[in-house]
Image 1 (spheres, protein in one colour):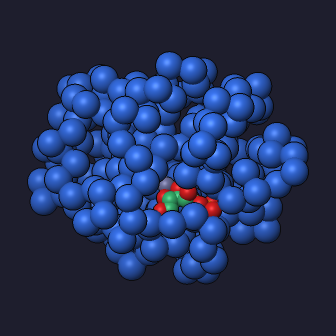
Image 2 (cartoon, helix red, strand yellow):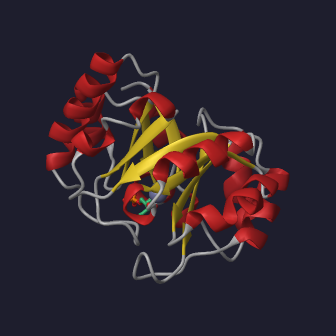
Length: 214
Ligand code: DX5
Ligand code: ZN
């Protein structure tokens, strides 16, 4: 299993020790949650913070944009150090073009689905994306309970990927811990995002290891 700890649960008053912890951990990526207060009912942080984080983070940045009109920010996201740019399906009118432009900018392209958006809507884009991020909470906040229907959705997505021959990875975000993570692993997830489960623990690296071994 690959693990992407979410910066949203780190100490915003002093990010350096948390990023150094990630650098020296078994984590595969660092998950960065950007919110605009419009697409989701919260605002997290923006590009200046991402710039600063990318300078000291040694793991690839997996950027989850919870914003309207993400197309406007493609070059900015790339310049802030993103390895992968995740855009919400619900925020993109012309998803095919957005995905192509993310690739042209030199990043991997991910598409994110809210809990109520069915996997079947990806049928005609799945070949073109590098990753699908399934939200297992309504986006906007860390520490929310896992929405159980995501297990079924993960299975649906795994079957869609196999049927289409796509190479897309399956990432799941929200309410992930060792128990929900195990079920997601069995259903076919490739990457687990976890915020409070990792940063809320006395030994975050141990939690990362636990998820990695699922
Ligand atoms: C929520 C964010 C998540 C969040 C997950 O909108 O997309 O990445 O940090 O937090 P936990 O793991 O605490 O549910
Ligand atoms: Zn996220």
